[in-house]
Length: 453
Ligand code: UDP
Image (cartoon, rainbow, N blue to C red; front, side):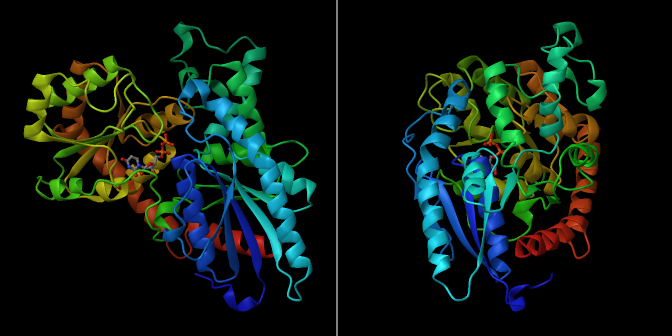
């Protein structure tokens, strides 16, 4: 890996992280990698809500941005309000902070360039950067497929093809093969409009470049589509969590007891269940999940975040009889060290909501998956897993279906085949990350690009 520390060029990077777990993590991972190059100082500007732990990143400077959204419940219904509020509220503080940095640089004899890297949800940073004449790079933490899928929606609207009729939901969108109408990210106009701002960035302040937490071979056609429509370099440097060891970035405390529990289980015998950091489910869905797990007769590790089942503090929704049944072959935790869990030899399957980080984490460990997508890019990611990469099963959340799907995954020949596919992808990822591989080359290009700004 090229070391740029000796070139003498230095740059001050200001990274604007989003307060969502699945966005904060890749930004801190990117910061850790760039810092390791020896030519960047790193400031993490973050909202006060869900702020990162500075003690875990002693080399970074942390700049909190007052946001007035602390305590907001990020359920999907208020997600757009939440995104807009923190963008509005953080903007003036960020502007003030950047002006201070620019003025400090003016007084220095050995000037450093200042470059902004912002999460795509923190779109206020693009307009501030543009107003102050600073280059900005956007970090996209969803799958690349999300962007073409999202950009095509207005055209589909105009042509009366969207929202799709129930009868055509399963049809493939010809321009987006192999994705179906049902895989498209949103079916709600106001949500879509705000998100358009996010995906396009503002026309007056286009990013100087985009970074995608993905791999060339994994999303070839989506990346081609993006390159055909957007100007500016695109760096595909994923999967970020495999590039450099980073301390835990979890907002919630990881329950490490699940690792000692996994140590006692047979190889590939456990299904790990986690729906990520944001999804909320109702009692009926959770109860079907619980019965499906119980009836499968397989071992399981289930993450249930406190408050994630509507109307309950934690697992009070579980019927008495089930709790007793669970004790024999299951463990429920509030939050797990997911990457460690997925890398554990006892884990034979991953039942996931298919958030992009979880998808990449599952793929990197060669673990076949059960797919229960909710919003945004999750349905697209589930389609990748099941139809394109052939290492996942899309499930209907009903106890009988779940029981059957877990058996297919952990016991049947089908599961073994999916594991084989998953391991092939895992191998290709290792190649992409090694010397001369696509992600490794892209990382080197990214460092050179930033230093040339
Ligand atoms: N995660 C974790 N422990 C858990 C559940 C999730 O560390 O018990 C992490 C997971 O490894 C992933 C992130 O939370 O990095 C979730 O991000 P993702 O993009 O998958 O979904 P989101 O939470 O944004 O819906």
